[in-house]
Length: 122
Length: 147
Image 1 (cartoon, one colour):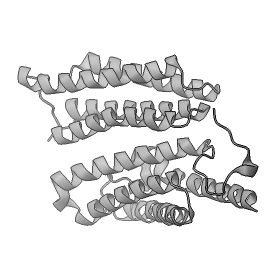
Image 2 (tube, one colour):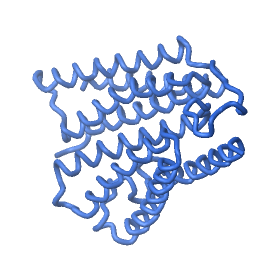
Image 3 (cartoon, one colour):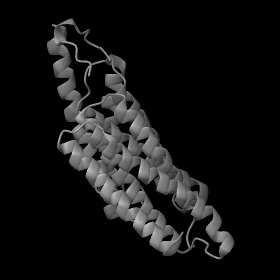
């Protein structure tokens, strides 16, 4: 993991999640803003996957369990498309809120991933 | 947006607007995913540390998955399964929550239900109650329409 990239990713995920929750509470249907925000977070997660695969080879291994790390990362990667699928199966303002819940959950997972990589030992 | 009038809607129609229930189901889905992931890691790496707690962790993951599915599905049988699984979750979070307070050895703090779900923002404690409220409300609308 590249630390500044992860913090940036976390900041974007939290902002995107709050944006979706805000748009949902403002009774907005899923639109380019909310779906774009989800797409951005998903792309950053895929970038994180590439970073995580490459990093140990260049002398940046996880300090904690890599199994746990990848469980979080793959869960987050799967979570967002699932939320989009479920949210858009019935397009209401609640769909936007569903996107927000999923993105904020992904943010928590990113935070946990950072902890596992940098702080957790053994 | 498709909105049928309630009068010509069959009682168990899957096209009924799920409303805020969709968000509830999404939270259940996230919990199911989180519990499954955590339980998988625990059983794969340190099952011997606390076999009882980690077995329960796996059981809770399965119950969350079944609960999520049962909330999505309509019909009497799924309605009963939803009640059964959600009640089980509430019981689980209360019992394991209490046990984890009094016997930290038996229930390490990293299971979904430990300390009443503190590691998950107490969502495991709150969500079964919200689920029950939603199920009750839904079945009331349901019987109101079918009569």
